[in-house]
Image 1 (cartoon, rainbow over the protein chains, first blue to last red):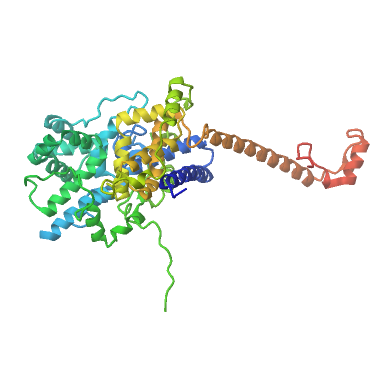
Image 2: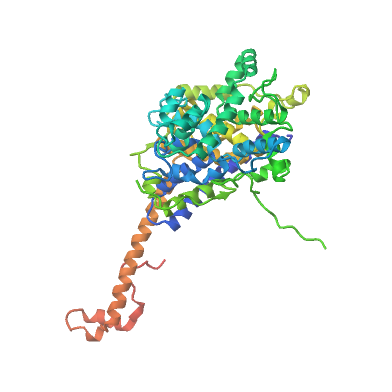
Length: 318
Length: 244
């Protein structure tokens, strides 16, 4: 009988599954040692919620423990909201610095977009994938309602932004798309309550511009019309689109005119290329992209996603 | 709802279990109660398989379908490889994870997952079926598949928790193990408490200088007093563990 890769994979999967159960049990026990008199089932639920919030980059915050509706860091803030409050640095897109022009500027922009996508926490992915999470907030009822964002027009956006503490002048200074993006971000990130600063708006504007630049051009419509089934599929795969949108934006920043005929405007259909945001990101950070699986980490800080999985001690040779 | 006394501490780890555990402990330390972190949604529905003749027939039918002839893949046209034989769509595990969570968080997918959990499907099985299916579609390679297993399982567990289902992680009713451990711990705790009290009483009696010779005659039968004198500290409590 020859080598059967599928058999090996299935065997490995089985091992991983049982290994994870052991890890879960060990983690529950570990918490019980620190915090007394809490039932295991409660700890398990808390663990699952915390893990889901981290894994989804905060996108699921509205879906778990009624995360939406209360601003993080305020009275009544839920645990899931609170968990997200360390993520401001990465979501501001300042990891690569700002202000450079020319090619360096383009790389900075691309790097920041990539960092927001790869490091995953919480804002950039949250604002896009958050729309998906919102649709499943009502788990027990399992309603399919509200599977889209709540901000569908600029009037609603202005109404929502009116509650943020921003002045009418500040709101009116934004374009309609930016208002909608900012309002949606406000709902996704802060749960629609509390203050929303200009720094938040700037971050939201960057995200909105990304989305608008990638989704709006006529070239995409033409491509979608030519490939309706593929376009529908790509629309349906949710977060995959969010990632592709950012990729498209990075490509356009580097490659030039987004209005160019034939530009796919965010709908990435080819495989990894030299414009892959990961590679741009890796190059900026001095990471070999072939070693990228070593950098698959989790957390609530900008470092999540770019810390090595292991650092083996090497033997010094004289 | 509690007002947290501080913001969350930065956490980075290669293990999602570790991050989750640290986040929970950090939340408790910051002032959240466990009920605020994991609110009680009432009694849970136990995930149990229910017999379904139609389903059984389907499984039997699937299992009796033809399989490839040994060596069949070797005669395939190399110019038309299977999807999993081509470079994967997602080389970066982070992208692959975003893709998978995007799929899972869709309402229709969620509905199916909740249904499967309620019908007794194990979290590990659901996660692995989804990941394996995407591997065969050429979305990612087996290495990335294994890296995604743990986070995807946690997401499915969170869905089960939110849907108030007492799901199975790997085997049938394996969450009962947690309850059994809780019960064992409770019993152990009570026994320890009793042992401590008993020890205190014993020590207190010695300290007070109560000795068999000082006990008033007639209160305790003479043969027992003799036995106490003879054996002294070797006497075991009636509740102590017997010899094996």
